Amino acid sequence: MTLLVAGILLVSIFLVQSIPPSAGAGAASAAGVVVFVLFCAAGAVGAAAGFLFGLPRSRVVDMTTGGQPGAASNPPPSTSYLTNSNLIKVSDWLTTIIIGLGLVNLRKVPAAIEQLGAALKAPLGGMPYSATIGVSVSIGGAVAAFLLAYLWTSIRVRELLEDSERESEGGVVPKLVGTTMDEARRILGTTPLQMEAPGAVPGDQVIQSQSPDPGDVVAPGSKVEVT
Image (tube, rainbow, N blue to C red; front, side, top):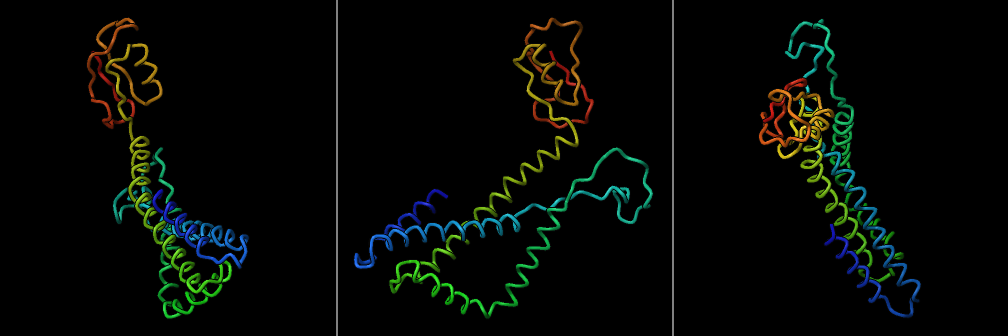
């Protein structure tokens, strides 16, 4: 992203320097600002589309059917909650609409690009290549932002959702080795886990080992044995 911003700044400087002095210093400065604002606007649109296309799909099984296809519709009562997948559904609808409208209006794209270039020529200094720069900045910013947002959403957002799901399904065992008994009790007090220690151990004693290992996911209410 830093390289993209640096590149667009160079394009802005090039455009400002290429505008003749007869156009006025205000026109040159305005053209540089327009290029940067145009890149940011195209990047915002591309990032939003990349987020919609890259949003991970949930694999939650509908518990109202007992977790099995074709199962009875009256399962026993459960205290579990289903993950809200409304955002996933909206993402599916919007991506389908975007692709459908894009295919239907595909033949209109060249004319739309020409109109965009003609509209951007005057704000970008009125030079013969101003329209080309405007269209290139718009398309380049949108595509680059789309790819970055798509990759970030597919990788980072997926990791965050998976971590949240693991924490909601069970307890993630924290690292207790090297802490005192009092500190370990405070740490486990924030989790659905319990501590199991041999006998009455003073609170200032340091934990040397633990089972399960840190990072393991166990059922809520499980015990962590410490030595």
